[in-house]
Image: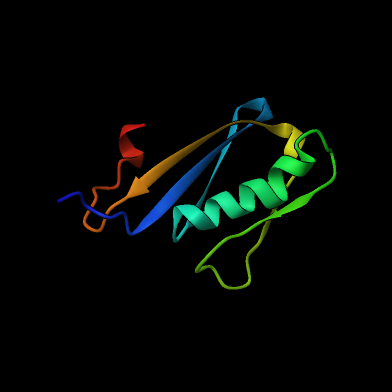
Length: 86
């Protein structure tokens, strides 16, 4: 029986070598943000909001044109934090 991810870590690789990570509870939440907010403005230099869950009082905005790559990683309960290995 396949395991079900508890959330999805979305790694944004940004122009200039910067990286950001945001988390989505479901792949559908990510797909909704990606197709509804990011893709329609992909060539835009105007800021769009990036949803940050579970961090009260904090928000992130990004210029879609500056995103060079996106990696979506399923995170399972009990997964080892691999940030030390990247």
